[in-house]
Image (tube, rainbow, N blue to C red; front, side, top):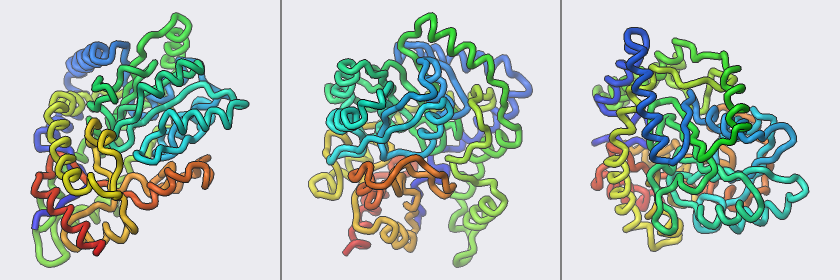
Length: 418
């Protein structure tokens, strides 16, 4: 039986794996070529998002860079949604600012103009300075209404396309056109997956903002250790081999499962939330070939994801198990969210049929996975986000999931709940 995974390197083909190794070697042998390729990527992003783009090692570095450029720091408050991961909070805290968590709407997994307005009014004495909109799981947020709200209250609007790259707004416009700045993450399991990486694109920088950003970037001295680059850029090939050999063996002892065990035991396989750099770092050139390869195929990947979403939507779209069709149909389709009574139990039962969905995104408001981070989020702040996190099961749409696989997942979920 074909094993199906939510993640475990499922965004990578053999070509991607080769490009990752190529980047490691190329960063030593021909760094000028990789630097030129990164410049080409920058020009492409500049044109696509009508701004000026800067590349970093992590998406959280890009968030920090954006906030610092606009002078947001100590004593300031940044509004963002509670259905998210801790990396966003970490980026805000690095600047000295504080996150203020906004609840999500009742028919989706993003903050709305209404929940934003309520939070803004409830905390107006804290003088919020910015709003970060995430497009969680690749679903759409009502960004046009949020843009109007930000304009009315002089709030900086930042669009986070880590999960939403390629989606469309309420009126059919591409996302990434409404924020004062746009940020990206190219980390594991994102739409563009280079294992690590991030970027920010500024629509327009004033002289003061440019000077502030330049001075901060000149101060960056930390580098990504080579052993970390090796571990991350071998990850695509390692997980490809693991998935291909998952059932090579007898009984529970198989090559793929042994590789997974060894990878975890030696800490070669680590949580994507774990970061070894404590400060922002520019993107190492070794990640450029994989990033370029992923970016060049993003349109076909988006088409595939939308096709898989339509299969899930055909079954779940008319039930209370999922969210409004517009937020799903217009999104990037990174994952398909379904609400079930006990998602952990359902995911565990599906493992008996070689379907691995335990990587849920997210298990709690401001999720930190297995790292045990201490978030500033306080329970009951965002009840809808907490409810969704308690019940959501996110279904895979990546390149290795066929329409037949999607039907199989649907059938197994229904059986597990019967």
